[in-house]
Length: 476
Image 1 (spheres, rainbow, N blue to C red):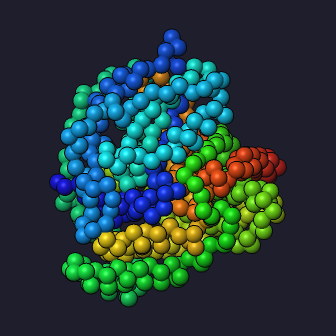
Image 2: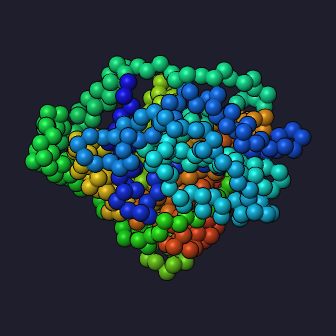
Image 3: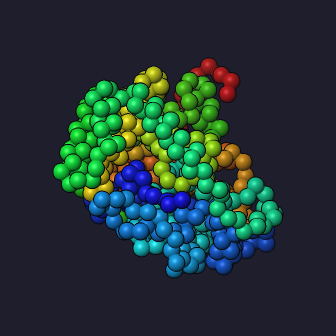
């Protein structure tokens, strides 16, 4: 079965094409303890480990048929006859003493460079020299290949549930089920059509029969753009102006904040809400401190975060491509106290649960997909415009069990969220084995004060801990 690039997958290629400052790769740093005896694996071991498992993910041996989108058809993923696994895995050593400071500096630089579109769009670095003999596998995968939730499944291929897990037999690709996939797509589309207003429904129906005549294609693109803009006006008010949304260079800076998951659960048990509410409140406090340090007025209705949400079925584990929608969530940075901000975050979450915004953004994505490839890029810019959101915040729940690779214990995962043009800050939150890591990605030129955001986020978590300690005890 031909592996086509979908319009949503193509969006992430187009965002890079539209602006050189945008990087649309996701990734993570998987940090391991030393193996028994203190050794670390070699690049050859990593290659053999990956080679035995990549058969389940054929796209990792494929490249784009065309390096740019546009024209009359979407590119496809085609087998790369020159594929050589070793060219996607390399070795690097962290400068001493290998602390968080050196690690984050190295990660910021590594994630500042785009992937080569003439090759399969992924790579891994075996990074040694971390403090206490630790080492890491640092990944970079283009968002056009996989979404943030799907990438967790990809990581599972490299990991085992025991340090001495037996070697897996070299595996082939899972059997394709195109009929089921098509039925699932039709079912999802039917749900969207039930939600859409009548004018959008007419546009979707007419789009199915549009021939690729230049004039008709142009009319279809303009109609789709108009539908997108109308839904956006109905569903989402304009995001406030902010120094977070500005021209920015291609260089990135990275920072992390670590929190025990038990602490976040204690806060939500004592104050109500969810662990996700605690995470969003922490980000809110960090952003508030940074805006205040800049002397910037705090928007009374809050900053707006784009929060990707998973719409991938459980049956689609290890399926690549993007299956995401988005919510636009207000972060109440103007709240005077941590308690005020947390209450506002909880209220916002309740509002989102009772609304139709998730279905609305799915409808927007479907409408955007009606435009022909040659004209889709303009709509992609609309979907990621600064009028919609100020910052990206994604929260991916990971496995709450200890995992291993190549005989070593996986200690933590430092997550990366990409930055679209004029969006200078993104926060990825990943939980694993009792810990939570906030990975903060920032445009270096636009955010020279990343330490203020990092320290403010950590301080907000401590303030929430203090509130929880003072509250009436509640069961977790």
